[in-house]
Length: 260
Image (cartoon, rainbow, N blue to C red; front, side, top):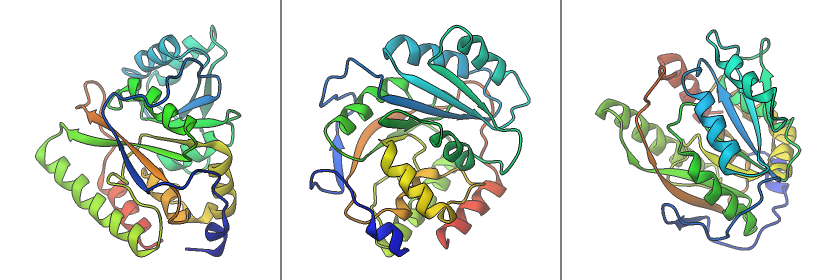
């Protein structure tokens, strides 16, 4: 790990690196979401994104939602714009050029976040939007990073095995490099303090596999081991609509990131 990452100043209370928050628990009641932007990277999620946006806007007063679309070929952008025209809290980033990939989409979106906190979640409804409240409540207690951890994984056995092996390899890589760790470092559902992570991106941009899909893993690699990581349990449901983006190319990019 580079000297820049080691020198980062974490403004947070001293706490264990891994804390468990029970499923559905909300340590700090949240009634105002003006300081949170939810980043939703998308690629061909027309069947899901509208329902997700409607839920977020309806249940979280004041929340900002930033959809970073990786040049979808279906009606994803149309679904987003149908809501953005009538609600200024919904914004669309149409990524037509440059590097393609979920990580690149999230990094681009983070540069357009102006709220104190941000959260990242998939647009396929496998990440339950009700968990956003718990993630924000953790950040409101002063912690810099909250990770939604899959405790029950309702997927086919081969998918579970791939994820389990990838997670074990990722955790070993984080331990070996002296980075903060968590039980689900492959999670695509997490939240953090915007200023801290924008500083990480600015100082360590070369440490990210921009074509990859595991942006949390890349972020953890850049942070000092003392960074508190609070885990929030949730149930990962099977995809109901659309197709999974996992492929052999994505897996190869991830394996490359283990040695990056």
